[in-house]
Amino acid sequence: MSSPHIRWAGPRALLLELDSLETVLAVHARLQETPLPGQVDVLAAARTVLAVFDSRASAQAARAAVATLDRDAAAVNAGSAEPVRIEVVYDGDDLAEVGRLTGLGADGVIAAHTGQLWTAAFGGFAPGFAYLVGQHDALNVPRRSSPRTAVPAGSVALAGNFSAVYPRRSPGGWQLIGRTAARMWDLDREQPALLRPGSTVRYVAVREVVAVAEPAGQRESVGQGGPAGQQETPAGVQAAGVPALEIITPGPQSLIQDLGRPGFGDLGVSPAGAADAAGARQANRLVGNPPGDAVLETVLGGLSVRARGELTAALTGAPADAEIRSGSASRPAPLYAPFPLHDGESLHLGTPEAGLRTYLAVRGGIDVPPVLGSRSTDLMSGIGPSPLDAGTVLPVGPADRGRVVGQPEPPTLHPALSEGGTAGAPVVLRVTPGPRDDWFTPESLAALTGQDWAVTAESNRIGVRLDTAAGGTPLERSRTEELPSEGVVAGSLQVPPSGLPVLFLADHPVTGGYPVIAVVVPEDLPVAAQLPPGTTVRFQAVDPGTMEPLRPAALKQPEPATPTPATNSL
Image (cartoon, rainbow, N blue to C red; front, top):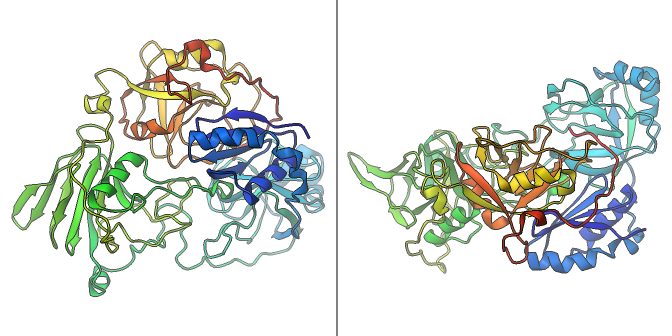
């Protein structure tokens, strides 16, 4: 096997291009079994492995180590376990069309689907969604020209040379050939995902499937009740003597967040966590919490909460007028400083005067049960507590008596936002080139950092959607083939066919099928998370080691491109 072609995917991640799926699975298995120092996550894809590290230093040290990984990775047998048996009723809406496209007819499609062993290559898009590669390409079919707005959970589908089972109801453009009752994702299992990279599958045709009841307390989609403790009544919380926060009004969107759940990319689970991690850390620091305690993240103000018990709280992030009410009396609540919130008092937030997201921490942290090690709400994967509703009561954990309440601090909000980035100078975000900058024309590489961009109203926790500012031009690709889906990191500037970049934030998909021209450095992601619609942004290319600005011509990574076969996304 040849050495991997290594590309930087931001300052702390390496994208390894490999020569075959077998090599991908072997290298991935080796990194899973023997992680490199500082390794946070590793994600297999069609022809790449993405390795994410906790620091630039760890990533640099790993670069030398991964250059020789595949020389002995073949010793790892990633698919040695018995095949997973998935029973399928072949009555899908597209079965006849797939028969026509392949020339096999419906019966021939069923025979080809059940007559070969399938291997899970990589995950993405949703928890439990696995791309399966067969032993031959007799079932290679395109996606539907018009994607469905809702594909039922359990649908068995084909696209390109892949097969997959939809783990939950979601939009999708794959060709549906059948259905199964196999539970692809179940948080009640020790291993929630039925399939991981390297797993093998044998599809078996049956006349009917037995529906499996939803496990109690499991949440698989946003808005559905879940294992977050919100179902507990206020009386139950008070009877146990546990202090709590009651949500009076949640505002446009209020979520429980901590520092996220990295390390589950192979399961299709994004890291999530506070979009502005600096603001969340500051809020916890001010009330004397560990940095990873759960806080409330609210967008555009409007949040009102009531204390049940004596609490110490702090507000950080986007500055908003805040008022504490007790009967007919009221007093202002400070920002970026701890303050008491007495039993029965309510806290009311106005609209931020700058920025987008405000954080509320209480001493002891929001004590809802963790899911996969985190209390974060993940809007992309649909995991964790539901978005907060009026009447929700959130228990507060016990305070760590060894940690002291902090002193008032300056805000972490970027000065350009505080000065009103919509009318003043652009907010500058630093980027490092690649991993797919070589897919773009020289003019587009120059335009990325040479023109202003405007934040659109379609932005959310998944990503900041950008449009050209006055006189700007969209980015143009120099390569027209389809990029196989590959792992992406937070901060990635992915460029769809429109040429208008999308800046991935905390809830980003774990894989993407559009080229990433550059990556916003991790230190600037809290700034990106606070960009309101209409803000003007300017990207500045920097050296990933020194953070010193690069000359415009230096944006391009030095590595040459490696052609890879096309694939299809969900």
